[in-house]
Image 1 (cartoon, rainbow, N blue to C red):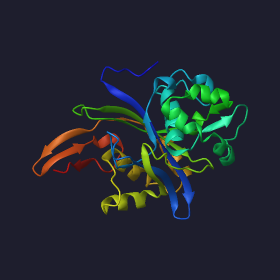
Image 2 (image 1 turned 135 degrees about the vertical axis):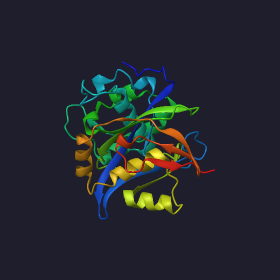
Image 3 (image 1 turned 90 degrees about the vertical axis):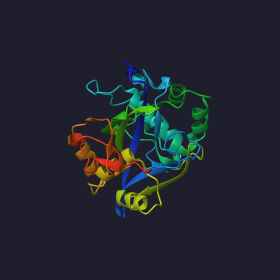
Length: 259
């Protein structure tokens, strides 16, 4: 069943891809194109809107759970968007227990532009290449909904997943740069003006940074009660703030809006 559109929110999903490196836990992030109408120029996790083609794809997925609080289309869309935007594909050859290799991924890379332009559907791509989506590799990390007063609103599921052994690279279209970095590097870069990071992304990076490994971050997410975070605006003496509830599970609960 598709998510309700009564609130005029746009279903979307993103994947927080994590790995171990010499400096500890790292996550893959992309820089949004400055012409994109949402979070332009910002450092974000790969992801985007859920398309019509993402629904009723259970036959192409592994690890779909009926008890999940969200439609399977969120995981399908998250995987599709990650492939289009970063080149990473959470999929296995049908009948295999192993995520496709980096060398196999190179053979499939030409599909990225074809999928983005609509020349081929995600369903047809998977059928043609005899692949099944590794939805069981994605774990719910957070659930955010854009404030009600905003003209464009998103209902976003954040998933966390251990990055497969594949080479990640931005698409040069929606994203113009990409990098692996630790949560601390991202936050320090944001404070120093090197990176632009919007509030929802930043507080989720902070939460990710409470862990020292990919395994620990995923385990912590599995133990966390996922609550819907719906920010609101609050006027204070020194300006207007975006605020989230105290029980949202984040240490940072407000941010002053510039100007």
